[in-house]
Image (tube, rainbow, N blue to C red):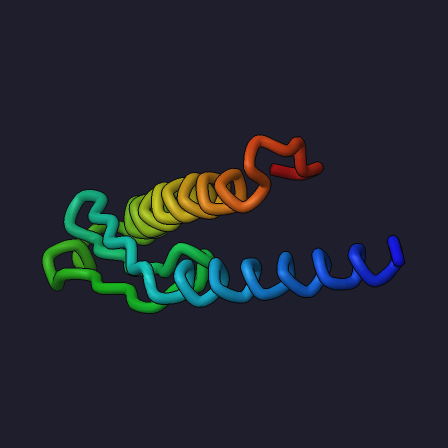
Length: 98
């Protein structure tokens, strides 16, 4: 009987994870760094990159640095959102890696 209960709880958890996954995928994060715009979803999937013409005239090293910093900020925001969503799922439980 205990095995049935565990299986049922596992299926419920899987359903909740799927819901969170859909929610994270739908949540769009916009980041702008010195004119460079990066758009990701909360699953940290990159959706768009926009570089204004005046930035393209910068030297290559500066341009690459700006792009990298924009992506790093977008990644940080997505990670924070994912962490908060999975904390809600765990209900205060300590989940390794979160």
